[in-house]
Image: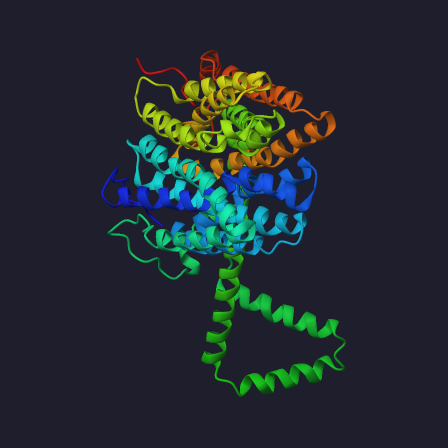
Length: 507
């Protein structure tokens, strides 16, 4: 598919609006799962680490499957994937209302809902990047605030629905709301070139030479026919036919009854089909090799390698507060009368503000988005270290606001990835990075829960979380130092279509 130049407007703003509501509807409940987490603890009586797997899977499994999600979006387009994923999210939420135990929730809420969210996230980010270039930071910031606004609203909404209809009724209603994703997905019109013609039916002579693994000389039709006849005779001998002479006489009699021109035409068709299948197999194998060669080239980029480590450690340490902050307050024996607003709602609204603010900052030429991202990591690590010292609702609310704002760096992460590897490799690279982000999301909350089950307090868990985020930030900072540019310039040339991140800000 050939894409025209990003319009940076027009129907792109419709894409931004529907992508915003798509992320709002699909991520509202999984991000506000902290409200459900407390209810599941009471309903099933399992440990904190075991119960935390439900929310961590819902937020991590879609990211773990990002390479598959990227392939689906590249193969089928954003609109079909979004519509299909809408059914997955809605169906998973409704199935969760009938969960008899925590293990059922692992499948219905953790895997089904999580995978649907991952597909929707990849679809919305990919189609937005196709429609925007100069205003990409703003567009990504706007659509990513959808999940944060969803967290803010769904935290209060789910608590109210639980009070009115119980946990099962809450999940049924939230699942019904998610069906609106189908309407949003139908408006994700692909950006295709207006003068592009439909692809022609693939023919043998249309298979490019670049897909040939072995560049041997193609045999003529007559040579291939001789080979087919020789193979036929050899096969007959191998099958122990009774009499070769009688078989030859029989073959001559049969062939004599068939028109010579028809026989030649049939043989030529067989040869053409054989050559086509041969070239098609070579092409598919070469595409497979190219995929892994591009992956190796990506990891030769120091910034990209440090980026995947940083996103893994950031999600291990930075994601648990959004899931466990309500239980942190309850474990600190904070009176519920002091609650002016759920802590998860504070995280949600500040995440929306952070995504929008950081997305706007990323569009300024004098702002280095990589250094901006590193700064958010280091500040997040410091805030996590401060959580054990918060013993009142006010201090927890302030830390929730800070962590929520800094978590808004998700809006500039696709921007950083694009600048690191280029728009041509965005889908490939982003799928790899989201896999490691999903791994961190899946492991972070259970690790914190296990720390609590082991020590009966959250202090050690958040010291560990803060250390992970700080370590990832420092590694990324070291990889982004300007000295690496000088080393790269003196080294051998990069392979074609390889990109390196220019860490020096434009003056």
